[in-house]
Length: 407
Image 1 (cartoon, rainbow, N blue to C red):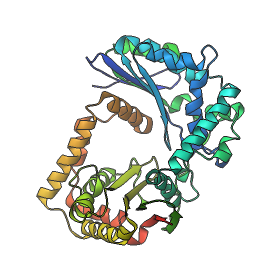
Image 2: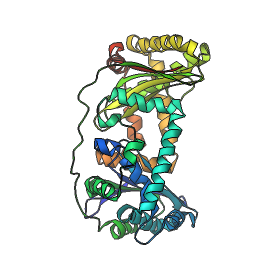
Image 3: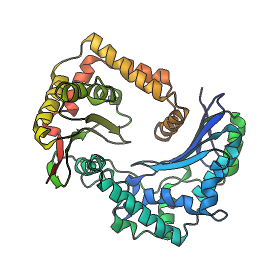
């Protein structure tokens, strides 16, 4: 059972009580790389790094050790649409978590020497991605699918932009985007909800109320493209895909199920069985579906020997054609539903995963979604619906391609 509360300044709070001695708590901010101006590329991620580098009353070491000294953890991530600070700790230390997260969220001092040092660290992170073509190709494909739109930008930014960031640019971005109505505190742990509310009000209640000063604009056009890049790699890397449904689309669940059938994590996915198990063309092949608040992307990625690229693409095309032209039988459909339900339920066995999930649900929809509701949505997907989704999303004339070919 989920408990909900809205602080006086508009910050939302959601909590599920548990008997576990380990608690998980997060602050999710509705601000990510898509909220940056063109000259701010990488700023949201940079802020996520430097908030740990000092506050008015704490130095970097004291921030990092605050939770670790009691056996806890604190971490953060930045995505296209969110920034999240979260932690896991023994349940008596809830107030300790609220104290440190409120401090770094609202009172970071951004020391000049730490900003300089962190820029170099992130540039090294960018270079590490360039050494991993299987990861870099995902970012480059986003640029193709969302050409000219903020969703197509690399979350890490570029060295050129990073070097221009200073304390004033950081504070301006925070003032515009880290506002009370765009913040959610999410929790799973052994604490009475009234006490949790008191902690939230004590440490976050003074945060000024406000709404975002800039509105997100959805992608308005998409033109399929084919691009080949020559790189000094041993393998060829290839990705193909299309724009897809957003988070609130009525067919989002159907596309999630279709994606799982095609190339999800299960070893019996169609792509894995055809490309890897039957023909042995590649070690890794998968399909992915990432919905955003107003758009989405679906893609198929594989890495293989250069001599197998065309053959692998042919097999992928064959599997996509099967999904477009052959309706699933009742037994196939039920197996697919069961598989996806199982994956979702297993993921929710992790209280940390569930905590982040319900926080994002509140952020985007202002209501949680129970496992029973998720299972019901999956169970209601029909074979004709899957056929219609496949024909809309995997239409060959809408698919873009990007290939890294060894030079």
